[in-house]
Length: 184
Image 1 (tube, helix red, strand yellow):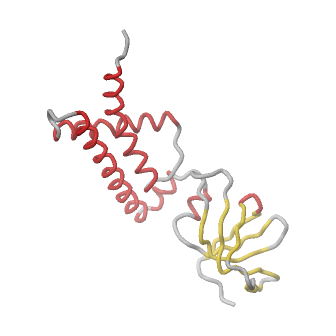
Image 2 (image 1 turned 180 degrees about the vertical axis):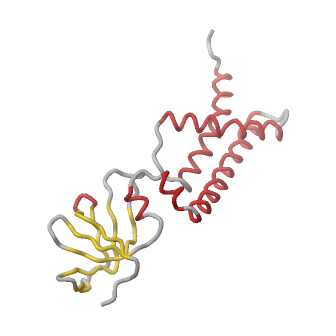
Image 3 (image 1 turned 30 degrees about the vertical axis):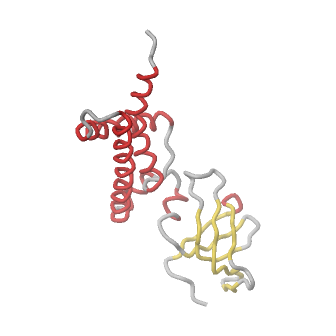
């Protein structure tokens, strides 16, 4: 039995909104890597309630209207779920930590912190994290520090004329996360 173009279009109209909802949620809310199989399963699961709600609201309307409404549900649902996830993760950081892949993401991504970094060559720097690359985006992680200081024999001195410092994870021996900003 041959599959018709109409059947393919109907199948895509059923499944694409679920994929859109999941993508919006992962883009705005839970940013973590998923396998292709996980994307398919979560997309199918998300498609079912979207299809039910769309069918109820668009009973008898054209396929373009039905697709438009289902995509609106998907985007709105993804945004609402990501906002809810953000609130939940803020109140329960342990849930966020379970979903993130690497300690780098768990410790460094939630908020701006003061870090002391020792590089592989022995130099030590202190700075406030401005931007951190997340492992969901790249395997070549790095960070951008502002208000940078060089630490020598327990004292630190501001690096004059430097706005910030880009540090690759591959160049770091260790990172100390400080509770409070350093005092001179």
